[in-house]
Length: 323
Ligand code: ACO
Image (cartoon, rainbow, N blue to C red; front, top):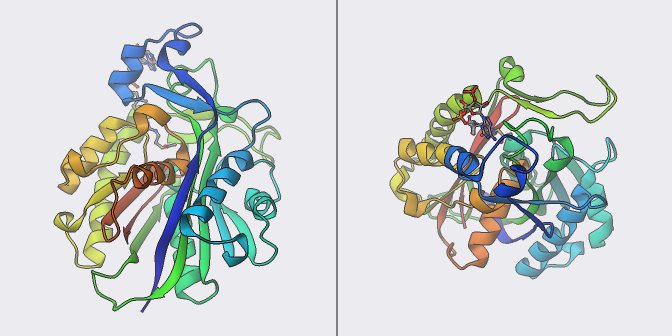
């Protein structure tokens, strides 16, 4: 069978680091509240003139270097973002141009915080169907552009950043020991629109708008739906939580991550946690967490990874991939 096998990853964070305490100067909040409710201690924010593509391009270049590839080896770029540079064209085409990719195709995916899982699912389908051999999957966001700085219940939770992962076609035996993407499960439910959305856009208000969220309700959906979809993705390949070496979850809230790990039957030693340093970077959070952990030498070739995410839509999903 054809498998989409990981070749390398990379990430990039904007320079500016904002500690929780900075918010206390303008909002009725404290470092203690933010830390205890979300696990977040700091986040990176892009500079005024720094766009989503400016974060994605260095992440893509580092992934190419880690994989030992040239831009001409990439057949497609699939970029997940809810904060594109422009309404169109796709931010992926900015990355395509900047890295010097002169053929193939590039497009964006919009599934907010679940975007990276949706992008991996899409890249996997392109590879398994033979439409592309090697695909660059990117999650990149400048969420700081859609935050309401007067709303303490949302603006303290998010951050900016980008991560990239290169997948390529390899033949596997079709067993659990194969490297590559083994299983991907996606879901969405538009009934929950009002729990998490942006109150703007080109065809509604004509301006970008700001994040609106009913945090407690999103929290409840997250802990139930993430554990369920994680089990679904593992069951699909006859695996159990005992087979998983690392959970690389979407980094929204440490309490959601801990609760999902518990419900999935994974000890916290097997869970990658970067939310304290990045905040919630939406579609960028999983590839950022993955790239940092790989760079630290903690994820080894052959490790089985469980990735999961939920966000606006609601949209959620999980992927199992052997590194
Ligand atoms: N500082 C101080 N107080 C605050 C702050 C703040 N920054 N924000 C809210 N509060 C207050 C509220 O106003 C409320 O006050 P009240 O009781 O007087 O009304 C009180 O704190 C408690 O608020 P809750 O919303 O009940 O707090 P909770 O413990 O649920 O934590 C949080 C809030 C962190 C948002 C949590 O619900 C959460 O993480 N939800 C999930 C959100 C999430 O993960 N979203 C992203 C997933 S999807 C995606 O990634 C886009």
